[in-house]
Length: 210
Image 1 (tube, helix red, strand yellow):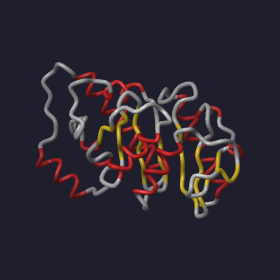
Image 2: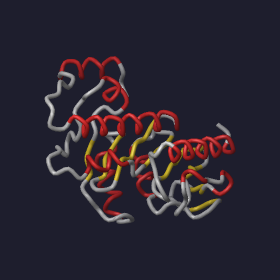
Image 3: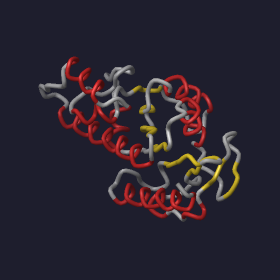
């Protein structure tokens, strides 16, 4: 895909996510792989008001090549790309319901959300919870790197989700499915639920490998 086209797609996606309340203020960042590096939304940018020409372009060492200074969370994206060579895009949000789940004391770090729907299994697989680190702490990058090879979707404790995908659209679809499942989980807390069985989950993973 042409770089100019990908810049426009990031801009359109950012605006859509902002207008639908999936991000707020200057939170969240979006990146996409190029043949000669990768694009990332700039530091301090509002995803609803991105300028395609000012989106950061970096090389694979993380050095800025063109555009504005990149998000301070660039290392999260770079860790995902380095561990997932087939990933073409990464989306990180501070979406309300996913963040809410990330601060609950009772969730299982190895499996933070139950398989409530088939589409959660098909688009997320099994989510991993990464312990809390301060924004910008390089230890957070190493924590993400430690789970990224096995999980394309991770939830940062007290922070938000990071999801990689085979395309920008796939990463966006997956992180929105994660947010919807988090909302369902919070809505159903305290109620008797009937999540998918282990056999049903295994069947979905066989039919729809991520």
